[in-house]
Amino acid sequence: MKYMLIMRATDDAKKAYKEMDFNEVITKMGQYNEQLIKAGVLLAGDGLSDDVETTGFVVDFSSTPPAVTDGPYGETHELFNGFWIIQVNSKEEAAEWASRCPLGPGSKLEVRRVTDESDFAGFEDNEYLQKEVEWRKAAENA
Amino acid sequence: MDGISARVDAVWRIESARIVATLAKMTGDVGAAEDLAQDALVEALRQWPRDGVPENPGAWLTAVAKRRAIDQWRRKERLDDRYRAMASTLDESADDAWEPIDDDVLRLVFTACHPVLSREAQVALTLRTVAGLSTEEIARLYFVPVATVQQRIVRAKKTISAARVPFDTPEPSEWKERLAGVLSVIYLVFTEGYAATSGTDWIRTDLANEALRLGRMVASLLPREPEVHALVALMELQAARFPSRTRADGTPILLTEQDRTRWDRAQILRGRAALARADALGSGRGPYALQAAIAEVHALAPTPEETDWPRIVLLYEALGRLAPNPVVELNRAAAVAMATGPATALQIVDELVEQGALRGSHLLPGVRGELLGQLGRTDEAISELQSAAALAGNERERDVLLEKAARLRASGIRDGDAAARRDAAE
Image (cartoon, rainbow over all chains, first blue to last red; front, side):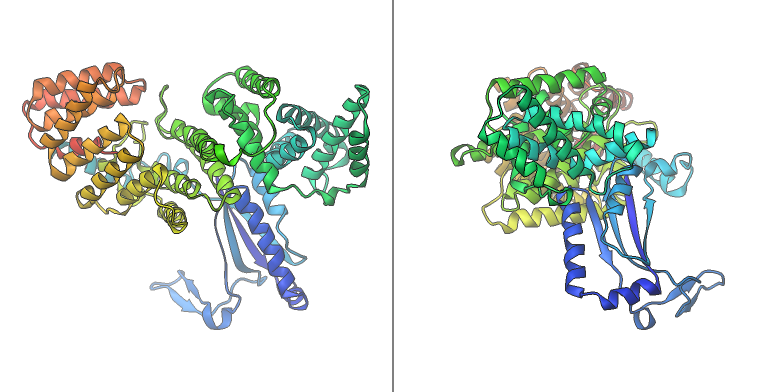
């Protein structure tokens, strides 16, 4: 199963980061990533720019067409600022990896299972699953 | 308690290779190392619920296992200077000082796949120690009783000890062959998951994921070996098709009939990146790289019709030159059928029949049946497909072959059942 580790930082964490040696921060994070790679579990990962004021925006689907605004990003201002997707065997293994992430106070990891085919069982009537069945029939009758 | 045992499993999963490697380096014996690690796990199940999980659980397990080793040596009254020195370094080693060395993990990989072991034993020992699976998990993946897995591992450990297999990487003169051995163990795990040779499950994704994980591990240990990256590429590209390979009832959907929109694009990208890494090392393409390149051609074709079949034919020709093999020949025939038509392809297949190749396998009559069907030789085609079905070990494959025969029978002479012709190309 795949899990996504979603990194969230509060304003406190961002302040704390500013006082840290950035070189040390990226070294520690690099070592963590290396561990994930060596264990063969890392599938994807990226950081998101915290320059939300100029490069980030929000698309709100409360109205039609959806409204594009500069924010807000949520009441607590816990900014989603990076993620990893890992392939593991259990929730506990995901938790074990997540807890090894070199983050400090104010930072959180939200860990979520990535959906797979089993999540769509019972939806065989869906257009896209149907499409496949029809395509198959067409191929058979060709 | 269940929570703790799941936690112990998770730690084992992450740390086993490094723990066993460290202990094997110390004792010189992988079997003894795995026994010691096992005892440490039992100790963890006893202590962690009471004292909490230590901050560095891998180091804790290693330290406990080391202490056990030294106790054993003491009991055996074999405490000479060497062991005394070990005992003192052990006392100094605080939990955080545990720095396992990649080279030791690599030694573990080569020892678990040592040619003195049977393939079955290599697979069991690799999954247990390198991939860090519990015996229960291995049993579940292979549909065998837990006792069978335990037995395989015990026997493997005994064989290694009895043969005095050194805990080391191979000599340069043996390197190529031994590395090929490691890669074939990993690919065997993958193919067992990809298309089960027996039983009713067409795909066992979990097993394929284990193989991928092992492949990525070994690739990070041997970044200069192109075939390791190529194997990862091959597995990623093939696994990318998993979501579209079966229908809801579990019957297989053949390559040309799959809904390509369901192929895992991220996985295809990972596969292509791995193949590019292999190519960038610049020592030419080996067998895994050529197979990965074939899988890449399929992955890049938006529809079966747009597949670059002539390129696939060339890649199979190169593969056949590198590692002559009747299965490769048969696949080449299937690709030739797509590139230039069934008549030329049938010549290749008939040559294989004359050579007596692949006797007892369903593959040859299966492809031959397809080609004959396309050529309008319906009776011969049906008879070949039926012999193929009788030889198929997998129920799903048998069903597919019988279905094809039934379709031919129902429609009389069929010309250009293009879909059926292409199936064989995978």
